[in-house]
Every structure is written in structure tokens, then in C-alpha cells.
Length: 266
Image (cartoon, rainbow, N blue to C red):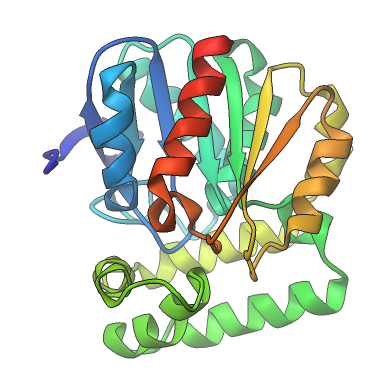
């Protein structure tokens, strides 16, 4: 499926997105080196039951870079205005990695707009899930690598997003996305992860919540999924076999089955 980009203007930012299908809205939030292209398989499959919308967050993909001062709450407010532009009052919100942290913060700001949460291979922010030393190491690496040439950047980062069994075509697909990364957007998103600790409000999440985790996720180990499951009232955790961090791309059939079943039942 080759869903064309559409575009809206929000507070002097041009925001690109892809949309497919009809039905209850399902909004997909990508990770910090991805963009809407990483949801290709979800747009194709889940659009049979849902209006599936995948944005390029400001600082990623086809969207404008945000100001240097942009923080997680700014992305959350931008997401709310994005939904306003599309005429969506309430939606299923699914976020992977950084997008999952954004989904948590969006729920904090606008809980009545969230029909359900799907949090995949994410964190309670890096600050809320790792020791300070690990957070610092991750942030330093992101800031350093943001200056790499695009092809070298992709070569270093893509392999750790999947299991060793991921086929070359999948690595090439994600490499093309990563090579288009925005250095500023990447640094700002990494900074937002390093500064965020969502554990202070996880117990106040009152929307039905599904946690989806690649069983072999090396960037966000399953223990972090268990941390979130134990903190969010009524949350369920499903493990996806033979999947790493970007589980929606590596095992799309299993990922989509879990999302479909959960959202239909809500």
C-alpha cells in the first residue's frame, strides 16, 4: 500500500500524515528515528476496520523541524491540534518507543480524547525506566551520532532495532527511513526521553491500555513492559515472538492481530 502524504499547518509547523480506511479513528505515533512510513503495514491492514492515521511528528519525516525549545508537552499539544484539524474528538492512540511516551503524555493532558492506549516497546521515559548513568549514555550517543552522515547513521542504528533474524529487505526499508532523519528533531526527541519520567502519573491512566512488546527487544527490555503493566490500572501485556524493538515492522501480523482484537473489544 502506497498511502500518499497529506499535510496540515499547525502553529507555523507543516505536519505530514498518511490516512487510510474508515471506522473508529486509530492514531499511530512513531519512534524517534521513524516516521509514518514505518506504519505501512498497519495502514494497509488495520484500515479494514479503522480510520488509521499515522503522522510525521514535527522534527521527523516530511514535517517541519520544531523550535529548539520544543519539549514533550509541546508535541502533546501539537498532537491535540493535529486531531482538531482532522475533526477527531476521540481516538485509539497507539505509540511505539518515543511515540509511546508521547501517547502517555497526551493522555495526561487530554484523557477524554483517548478511547484506548496501545503502548508498544516504549518506556516510562528514559528517566523513568533506566538508571541515570544509562540515560546519560543514551543521550550522549544521540547527540554525538546526530552529526553523522545519513548512510553511516543508518548503518549504526538500524540493526539494533530488530532481531538478528530480520531479513535484509527489512533492514534496507528501515535504513531508508533512518537516512532521512532530522538531526535537530532527533536530538530534541532524545532530550525529551532523557527528561521524562511518566511513573508519576501512570496510576492515573484510566483508559483501557494494551502493552505490546517484542520478546527480544534490546532497547526496551520486556522488564520495562512489566513495569508499565504493573503501574497502569488494568493494563495487559502481550509479547510478540521473534520481534525486537520495532515490533510492528518485524512481526506485523502478530502486532496487527493484537491491536485489532483489543480495539474492537473496547
